[in-house]
Amino acid sequence: SDYNQLGFNLRSNIFQGGALESRSLMKDSYTPEIIQKAVRDPKNWHGRRTDELGKWHQKNALNLNLQKALEDKYG
Image (cartoon, rainbow, N blue to C red):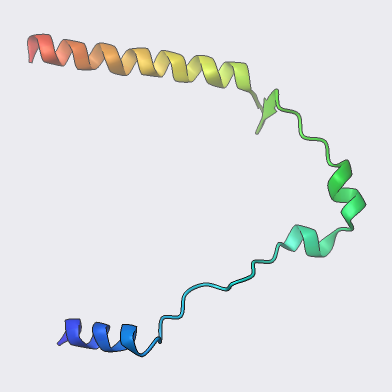
């Protein structure tokens, strides 16, 4: 019965989906000049430098590859 009820709701277009046009609170709150003047530093990502984050990902990938190789070899 749940399956039939779900099918009926889908056919009836009760679940219409999301809005066709999205709105941003930042764009609504500030003028276009403020948004254009916002400086985005690619070297600083949420308080971390991207090179530090990249080094962490590289070490993590090596660690995962090592763990997989050890599991394949020793079980």
